[in-house]
Image 1 (tube, rainbow, N blue to C red):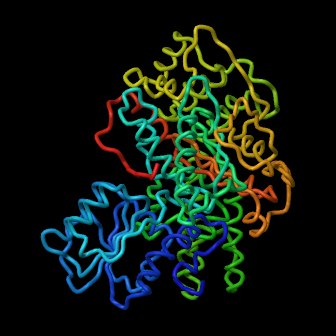
Image 2 (image 1 turned 180 degrees about the horizontal axis):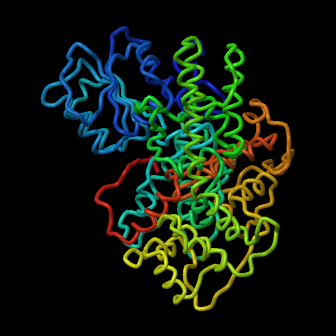
Image 3 (image 1 turned 60 degrees about the horizontal axis):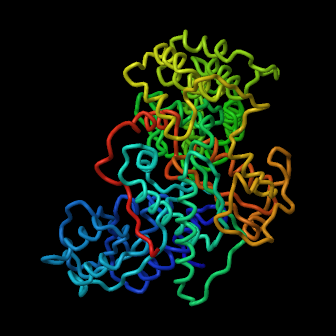
Length: 585
């Protein structure tokens, strides 16, 4: 492709660019180029996030898109311009579209693009109301959100409550929606994977979702325009429930990205901070920030050492004196040397963010981490078994840590014992002072976790590591137990772990061509994924010659978000559903 749109973002690994290049560029942008008229682009909240994750306004301007508008906000008519609608196929979006052309049109014509299959009733409603104004109507098959190079979400945090709350009235609808979104992911990647799920005697969510995805994939490829049914590809899709590993998402993690999102108030990937001059500033932490991409999975100690070193190297190259690097010094240096101000800005942002993380670490996280790791691993730093988990927990309860930090430690204690007695549970709730909101702990039972038991049992681990990482390795090495991980649909027999090595062993990084021509493992976690689990996808991919791991979920979790979601499970049904996606099945 010689087209300049999205060219700066093109990378074989980047799911976001892959999606845009195979979907949006081949439809919306191509249609735009067929007309010399300037156009207005109209988006709903979901497509706004999708498009903004992968392109800039300057890119759109180069394709004669002059204005980007919100579908649900009041807009003035511009009769001399054509309009492009990129939206989800929901009744709300279709009704908003119709209002733009009834009783009087706001635009010269409409080019309509749906993220997914538009149900016949909505399509007919739109055609009958304003068909004469529609020049193009297409379906793109992109109803998921590319989050990072190897991470995607369904942009649906409300799915957690819909699936796990005993008072939920839309669990089936939510699973149907997630299944449809997973089908568009597979279609975008041109994969027809074999499907497996984690079997759990108490929870049926993974099994139900696997069945739905299998059925919808079969229907999707039967209805392919080629008229020939697609054969299974060299890929596997694993579906697991959030209760599969309750420990990972509540631990204090000390790698840069996970630590920052846990301890710092980062919203919509935007880090807000106060500069030394007192001005409020903000930075976007995404794939465009190459320093962020380089550092995000490293331990905070490595990050804290690397950034000042980078700054000193830049300073030396500009013949600046070395000395201690501080935010104040950097500010003065940037004022004096405008030529490399932009280069220094990136380093300054991460020096500030790393300093913020380390302040939290020094204040309380360091002590918390020791207790948490001992409880999670079942052994101390010297490998000695934790014989009495309560002795490990007690200092946390007696110190003035935050409510959420104490709840996290209590949960790790309970999980280490596979549940505790009702009497002990009540005492723990009292210690943390959440007598009025015990749901923070008790509602974990809705995820299939043992919170209270009539008799205490305990288990210990030889080491702590996100459980999903072991699963990734076992899949590639063809070691997953078929009894625990049944096949909903088989993948080709040729799919195996040939050439793969353990992610804990050092190995040369695979080339892009290696990964793209090898197998692909897609993992979907029902109920949210943590940043630690996201990191595992990159680590295992780097260790393998023939497998690329992509991980996704309904949304991304921080420990605080997860605890608040758990507490909210006792509430009544939500008034509205976050995202509706209809599919052909």
